[in-house]
Amino acid sequence: MEFKEQSVPTGILLKIRKLQALAERGVGGEATNAKILLSALCEKYGIDESKLDEEEKQWYEFEMRTSVQKLFLQLYVSIYGTTERYLKEVELWKRGRKKIVKCKFTRAEYN
Image (cartoon, rainbow, N blue to C red; front, side, top):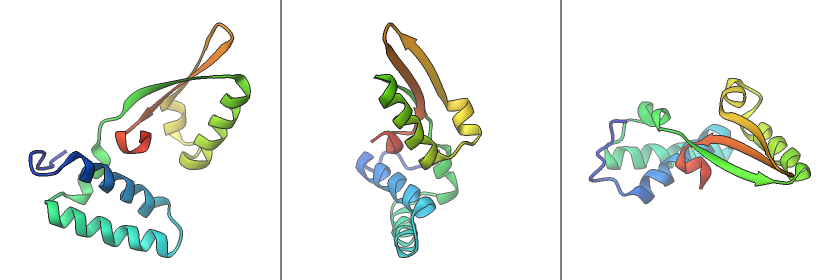
């Protein structure tokens, strides 16, 4: 990413990520307002909006019961869709009686 890391506080970067997600997935005026705020913040801090999608993702592990795992996966699919991302960035494991779901998320998506 070509951010001015020293001059952009981490909290602002996270806010920019969340606004970007809202701009992409929001409905009506919600998405429009998010795009306006996103553009304003990027301009203020000198961030190139085209570089926002290049944030590094990390693996996060969630341990849960089978019933909760089904709900978790339904929510994941409803948010991100059953795309190539689901196939490449979700892993299912079993540890004893518990189910493990490992997913790749950016920091903004995880928070």
